[in-house]
Image (cartoon, rainbow, N blue to C red):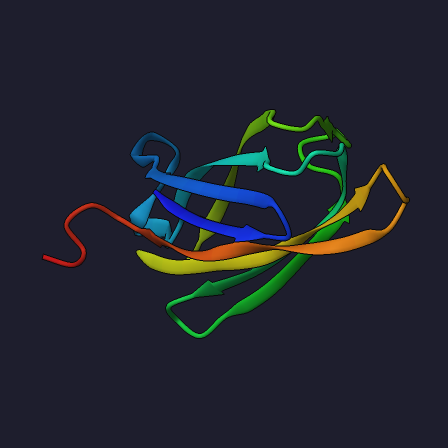
Length: 128
């Protein structure tokens, strides 16, 4: 599991290659990832937006931005965690993702960017 803390928000990431939703002959590799967002502050935070940088090992790069995550704009109370699952398609057996969440401190309405640590998407056995 990959972890990073930014301004009292801990982001943890776990990845999984999903063979049944992949088709290597068609250069289609599907990965799931689980994100855990933990609020270690003593005030509530709301996740407003996401920004993803997605790199495929063939040199392709794309940006995905949008409101909230998986259709939600969650408020995370002090000491609480918010967990969600999502997925990413790649054209090759390896890639990586990183980015940030824009979150709002509900105590003073200030917006901050919280780092999503870089993590790798790799099919089983690729690095052997």
